[in-house]
Length: 114
Length: 112
Image (tube, rainbow over all chains, first blue to last red; front, side, top):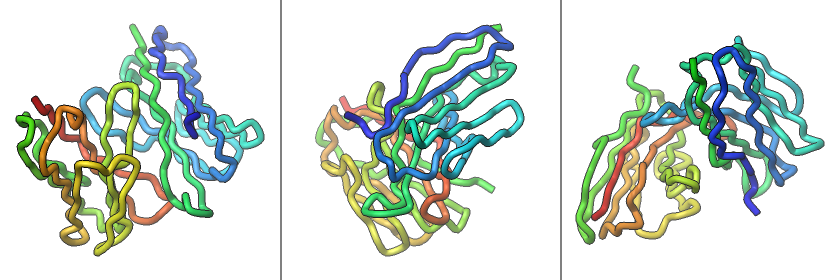
């Protein structure tokens, strides 16, 4: 079983929809959670960064972390065609032999059609 | 401000040939990483350098070597390329552990 599981999709939504992207994980030591966005033929870029549980909002994007369920989510409100990309979750711990090691999900391919 | 620069962007090799992928960052980051990205496999860590002068194996190091030339540059070498090394290679850097990565734009390598 992988440490981080992410539904690869693909996910196709109409413009303006609310998008929910999710990852589950098994390592309870993970405390730092990130979302990366990767456009076609480009490198991933950091989109959201959160520590421990709770919510973080940045414009149309909201990241949620539920450590009790080992589940993280990224919500995109009023989705736009420019949001079409692959979204990767990533996480790391601040303790033990995995200190600082970033573990990625497989990525979810999202298409927002006009 | 270029960020992380990778060269070349594309390369086709014949089986058994060697090549070096170059990576340079201008953000004064301490740590640098090499990943490969394959369909259905996600990003897999090949090698990393936590700081200048150190290198360590990642998840899939076989068939690769690395050199941390200085704080800015981290190269990845394929000594004898194999078709299984056909992939997209990304270099990344970060200033400190637990911070996010900055990625380069990738090198698309095909081994025939």
